[in-house]
Length: 468
Image 1 (cartoon, helix red, strand yellow):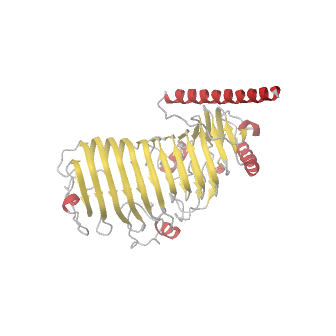
Image 2 (cartoon, rainbow, N blue to C red):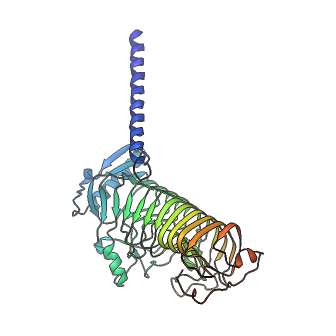
Image 3 (cartoon, rainbow, N blue to C red):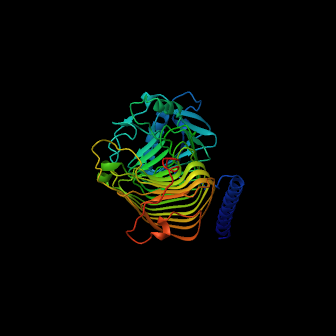
């Protein structure tokens, strides 16, 4: 009896020691990470099975093509997931050159510190894919498009994370060819998931995408957290994060410096997006920093034909950018942009702070319906601050597509342009509350009765200036 009690007591003490060690480890981990500028990383999700890329013949020398190693690893994880509920693939330190590859459900792709997944520049190793159904063609060129470096379709429970390892799209060759119009197909994304759910991308660095960087398409329950996204200003169309016809998306604590929009919320292109009919809804973008020298910090559209609703953009810092926040659409798009909330937006050295433009964008082909008019309404701004901003707001509705139900509450933007009409509007119905500086256009406040629109007076100097 005494021996049995002693065994139980010893077992109990071992469990206490184990949990104390775990607590100390996690405390030290959080303390170490929080001491840096990066946000403290969460402990990675545990999977019952863990593999290493080297187990499948991977060689991280920056020269060897590792596509087959990734494919073998993913196949093994798919088999393990069916038996045990999921598996993790560790990518150790090194440079792992590869062609595009697919992930599978219940998988964690974990990039260790100093690990880089590097895309090959050989075009013949990038597969071609059918156009997205809500676009009808490649976004740049008619016909099919190149696939993404990391891809997945009809998946669930997918995680890409790590100790700030890097996924590098090696995009310079693609950018140069695009500028010279030497490509036959639309460039590939860096990461794209389609028709999937339960996606998490966190604590990694994404660089040099050939085209859009992260593109979840018709997905739900997507979290992108603590991610650094970088491309040079001369890298065309390298949007940071583009949720497209997605539901329930959280983008937070990210640093984005790219050659196009930092974040662009989308939902399809003209008649193809209207027919597909999948809105982007319940999108939260918060606590991010964006540098977009040639475009906007956070955009909605211009591909919004399936509708965009219930978007919250808050606690965002935008600097050294052509535009701060922007909504863009045009006749032929159809769809709607409604229930969009901007809160606590800070801008520094930005040419145009708030932009709404209703004649922006091209069309996929000549079969679009010019009478398909988008609806832009119920747009709310609360706490807009800035310094060294040339034009605080340029809100251009049109007779065909007026902007309705816009509200601005508490705005203080230091402007570099000492002109009378620095706040520019047309075909706008809305209201202002609290302190607004500089003085808003006449449409706001004086023309806030429902159904009343006034084309604001604009100086000839502003016409065509600072293309919004």
